[in-house]
Image (cartoon, rainbow, N blue to C red; front, side, top):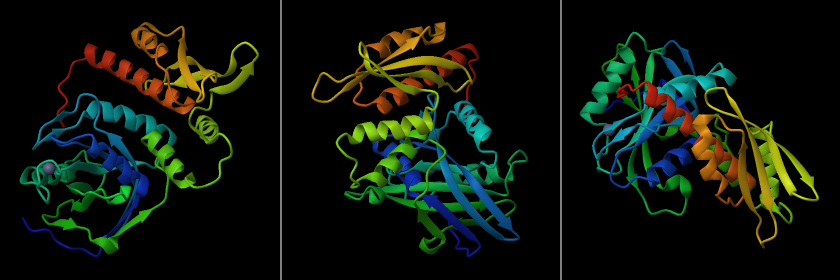
Length: 310
Ligand SMILES: [Zn+2]
């Protein structure tokens, strides 16, 4: 299969997006994995500029093997709709997946066939399909050089496959709209080395809670010490009240979470999470949010069992 060059396409991608992709790859040594790429684009005649602003994870019911990968499209649509509520301009740009587990250095014949079909499908919103492919894992202490990554663009009504080269790919410092914790990691990487005072964890916690968990507010009183309380907004639009308690008796404080009057679907999960200790307030809230969303999703998936293979 021959890949073509083009001067008509430009890609702008945040470091945080690459880090999210590479972190996901680190979790897989046998099977392919991947996810959806979202963002914005501008098109003028043949010129196309693609800006990545988020990566949607494969989802709890994704199916993987060493040579194939099927995403949980239903889960991804739910996430996408949630993002779209806040960011009207966001579109599906394409997919990413990895071949670092099987050594293939390019898109496979099956990948190419699928992407050509996607871009020419009448329900496909844009005139292009972007495919990011991870090919090789490296021993590197630079988190951005852990893997080799290639970028391809398919265009509607065009049989050629365009591979983007270095000069067409701009890697930038910019936050992601999804996943939410990648934005945090990015923030963390950017603040590393800065003097954050005596308790850097508390500074991060306050920044992150005020930005991503706006309803959850800090309180303190003589009996409980430091705690946070407020509604956690979940994937299906519902809310659950959380109380996050800091235990600062030890050398390093730990945190525990209680869900107040959880709905039936979250009861088991609430009991489990109440016994867990977290190293920071943000770790506690992010984990709780994920576990709640997973419980909601599994409940939903169980009622409407549909084979999602796209
Ligand atoms: Zn592939």
